[in-house]
Image 1: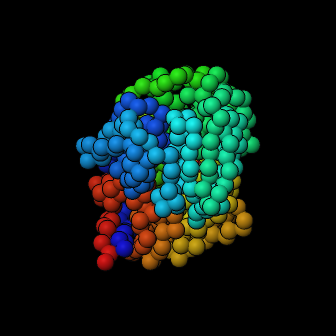
Image 2: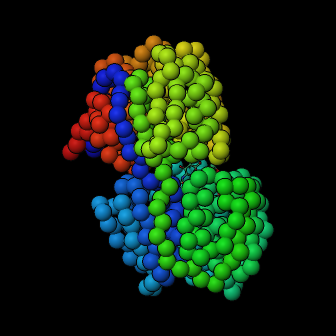
Image 3: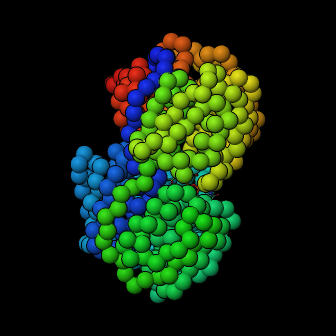
Length: 422
Ligand code: UD1
């Protein structure tokens, strides 16, 4: 298995291009099931999760053609669609459940494996099931698969979710575009990836209003048509690269970065002593004056501080002046990077959903293990500022969500290389 070797190497400088958002692309791809006409996505990220979604869609009968080295995905669902999402694919990636809403809307039935838990938490599907049931689906669990059917198709409905789940909002939104009548989703998630999905669906002819707020209204239409859509910038990749100069010093411009995608995160950077400036091409980040100050962080649904940047922010706070308290409110088991950072000399106490980080002067390189996608990149960030060499193993987690991480970091002066394993 591949490993990544990082050696602390002082300040960084230069530019990093930020890719299209993994999480947006993973919901835009299943939207192709809603129309027989082609859907083409540009600015797609080149990641293993996108290849997994490609395999899943192909197994359902969708033609997926990857162009320009994977930056463009041309999809067509004009043939026969098989409505069964197999466990072997779904277990690899939870976002596979995003085919459920579109399959129900297109065919009136679907059989989708339950994804199972993952390292960061149990991650049930009850909110998705309640949302689709409100639209008239009948859903039973048999032999590990959700069997969903409708009598005479989906019908518009008013539904309030018990929690603003991102995936359930996406499934409801896609399903409701072809339902009969009007649907209203209350306590909807407001993430930029949902706005991106709604924007693409509108290009396909859907009638949607209120995306980006807690109430989304969808007027069902008889059919959707083809479209071409650029995937929105990845705010999590953006935040991750913004932390590189915050941790190592120097000045880095993140190309394609936008404040509105990472506003809550920028507020915390500002409080920690990191400056973020808008430029014509993105965002430039630098330390304001030397040592980082401790800050407290609570993860929340958008527009709050994203759970997907919590591990990387912890890497920054490990060497801050003072004590920072990080509270994880989205996933129950998302501090697995803490013991790995402690192997590098960090002082962290975890109690339930709270981590207390006491800043030390400098971290020291160590062999560490990636436990999940965002944890893996937090260890790389920590390694960039540590004394000596850090070897991160199990980097297949990293390849799910970061394209060419070692090339992008080397280009701004980091000492980082991938060592191919046997
Ligand atoms: C999406 C993102 C993920 C991010 C998360 C929260 C994708 C592909 N993934 O995941 O990177 O970390 O949003 O911002 O977009 N829950 C239930 N029942 C449900 C659904 C969710 O209890 O039916 C719980 C989950 O276990 C979790 C919380 O709600 O504790 C948030 O989950 P959700 O917003 O659904 O996240 P995902 O869409 O899975």
